[in-house]
Image (cartoon, rainbow, N blue to C red):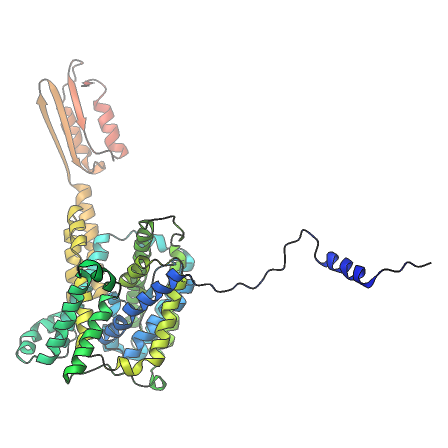
Amino acid sequence: MSACVPARAADSDRTERAHPPHSPPPARPPRLRIAGADLSAAVAVFLIALPLSLGIALATGAPLQAGLVAAAVGGVVAGRIGGSPLQVSGPAAGLTVVTADLILRYGWRTTCAITVLAGLAQLGLGCLRVARGALAVSPAIVHGMLAGIGITIAVAQLHIVLGGTPQSSVPDNLLALPAQLANLQPEALAVSLLTLALLLLWPRLPGRAGRVLRTVPAALVAVAGATATAAATGLVLPKVDLPSWRNHALAGLPDGPVLGLAAAVLTTTLVCSVQSLLGAVAVDKLVSGRPGPASVPRSDLDRELLGQGAANIVSGSLGGLPVAGVAVRSTANVKAGAVSRNSTMLHGVLVVIAALLMVPLLEFIPLASLAALVMAVGIQMVSLHHIRTVTRHREVLVYAVTTLGVVSLGVLQGVALGIAAAVGVALHRLTRTRITHHEEEGVHHVHVRGQLTFLAVPRLSRALHLVPKEPTSSWRWTAPSWTTPPTRRCRTGRARTPRRAP
């Protein structure tokens, strides 16, 4: 006799076998969730990035669309892959001089190819995990490099502010300045001065209303105010010209001498990597200083190099400027309350939308206003805080040599001179040891100032021989905590007979 099992019971049995009572439910596909803080931060960063990207493209002599391409790629690609979640990447003022020189020498399409090769080099460095080693470079060299780049940018953009065209180098720009002042265009100067005034005064608006208005970025207010004034008064000025994206030039095969191209790739890789890594460290400090629990992980510098490399490969391939971490946008992102990398990526998406839909509005912007904006950024790169820091650490010589080298010779040559100066200063400090001996109230004092290395052993031995060997004599020793074995042996050998004073 066979037992009959109800169909419902059989179905229930099969369901229980397929999903045991205590097994977790099937995983659902992840859903993209964007926090409100990330959304507001993305909008704030986008409003800063849009005019700055156009201004930096103008300063380099590249097609203006290249700045928008780099901003979008830096936001989406570097934001997604990079190891610093809140760092915002894009066209950076620190790369302006390098890129302008490359365009002048090799043309735009070869410059894009150099950007791609620099991205590949960054990928290699990231795979080798050498990012921490880049932070061993003397801060005086980095600050001097940025100061030199800032001076170069400011002097070049001053010609556009006055209504002219910049020359290829700082000495040429300075020599051409008197003639430019004699033939300045009042309309361009007026628009530039209005832009600079808004940049300076907007962050200082007082009162409660000022606190609300200051949430709008000063860069956007300055460019929008100058653009509206120029349009309302009917000023005839050169304006932004964005040709159709169909005519946008993409990367071509590298064309030029091999050694020159290799030096160009090395320079671009160096500046992009150092600026991005230092920016990631600065972002970590800003995040740690925010109130509340720390919810953002610290930067993975090797992964950040990989992200920057990928962004440069994509940007160069699409005809964009080189990409690096940008301090102004990263600071705005952190201060706006961003909590994840979604803010950086969303800002890149907003740049794409603006590049496709806002071209008629962007073409109202006077070039003089963008030049004034970039000139202000260049001036800010010469930081008084950095100068005070290198002065406190007695590295003014390294800072000055690097700055002057970048201004007069170029970025790579200036950095090389800065490294040579840093090595010279280190050797000087290593060999400069001051040893004195004097007697006071029966106690012999031996003072050592500077680095106590094996090179100071003869002088140290002579000073210690001045201490009497009688058991009743006393002596005091004042020296740096860092010594080498030869100097320690010299001191120990002479200290056996005399007794040390308490």
